[in-house]
Image 1 (tube, rainbow, N blue to C red):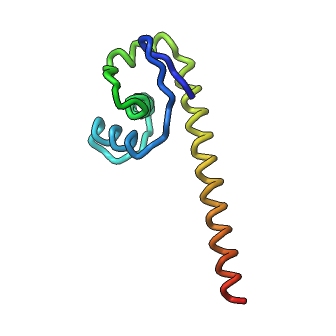
Image 2: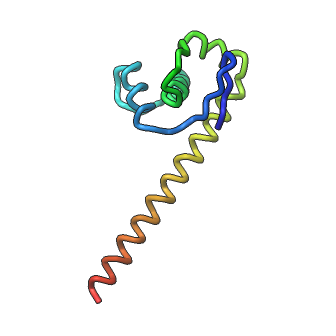
Image 3: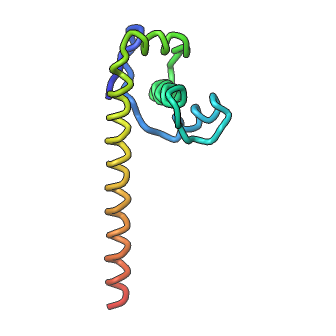
Length: 105
């Protein structure tokens, strides 16, 4: 998913960097539960997706106010990321199980 904020385009990436930024901002473990947590995580993903980023949180909130549909787009993107991770995890578990069956034979 790409977002353009203040003339800068960001290709969003789900990463440990984003999780760490979120935890540094909120001073709590990653577990977004309310609107402010989701917006903060969205901001964290945007910031983590660009090393040369100087996007201020206030500018991000202004952008959210002007682009309210971006929250549902982010939510859909995040759900797709989670689904993909689950699929990969299931494939790896299946491969481990198959490998274990081969070793038994």
